[in-house]
Image (cartoon, rainbow, N blue to C red):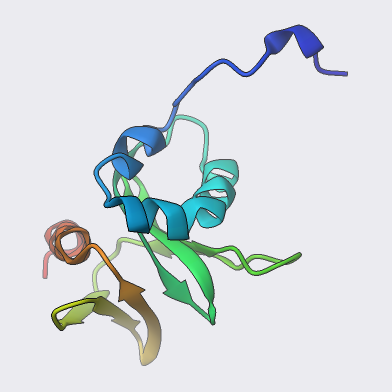
Length: 137
C-alpha cells in the first residue's frame, strides 16, 4: 500500500509539464485529460521533447514526440486509445494548416494515422520537423 504521506508534491520526471507549459492556455485546457493519460503511459526515463493537444478518433488527444518515439493518446471515456509510433525509416509526415488549426498525417506501409484540430500550429510544425529529422526524411 502506498504511503499517504507522499502528498501532492510536484514532480515532472518526463518533462511533460515543461512541454505543456509551452502551449496556449486553450490547448492546455482542451488537452488536460489526455495529458494525464500520456503521463501514465510514458516509460521510465522517457523524456518529452514537444507535445501538443489535438483530436483523435473524436476525442481530445495529446501528441508527443519523446526521445524514444512518437506517442498519440486520447481521453476517450473509459478506454483511451494509446498508440506508440516507432521513429523508423519509412515513416512519413505531412501537415496542413489554416488560420486556426493544423493537421498531421503519419504514413508507413500504406497505413495512415490522422491527427487534427491542433490549435498550436507551431507545435505541429515542430513535431513534424522532429519526426522527419529522426527518420531521415
